[in-house]
Amino acid sequence: MASLPTPRGSYIFDQNSNNIPSPMDMDSTRPFRKRQNQENPGPKFFSSGVQILLKRLTRPDFTKVFRKRTNSNIPVLRTPVYKFLTDEELAIEKENANKRADRLLQMPPVVK
Image 1 (cartoon, rainbow, N blue to C red):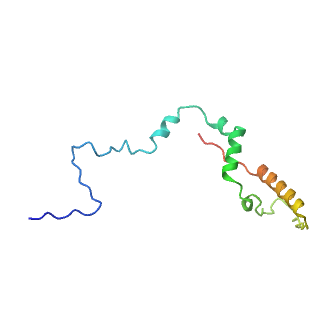
Image 2: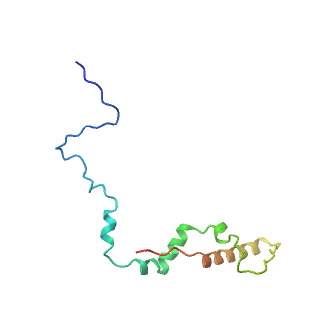
Image 3: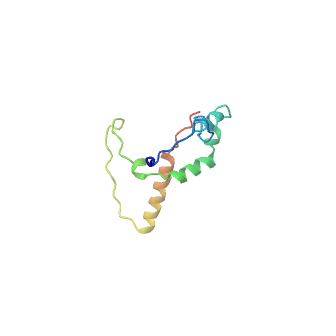
């Protein structure tokens, strides 16, 4: 008598065999639990070198940095200023906008 084929993807394991991984081996949070008792990562995170690297990696999104703000604290709205600029002046204005974005952009704090 022919045996029935097993469905695709089904695996039959012997109950006594050691090839089944234990649930403790599959725990993905286990390496992070060991780090809780170690030193505070805050001072390293807020060091200037790490902050520079994070700003380079994330690249500021200018639409979010310079988004429209609510006028709850401003009694009078400011009118926009339009300028006709040469290519050199435009490059200078873009540099100034990048500097303003760096000042406005802040990395989220580390939670221990």
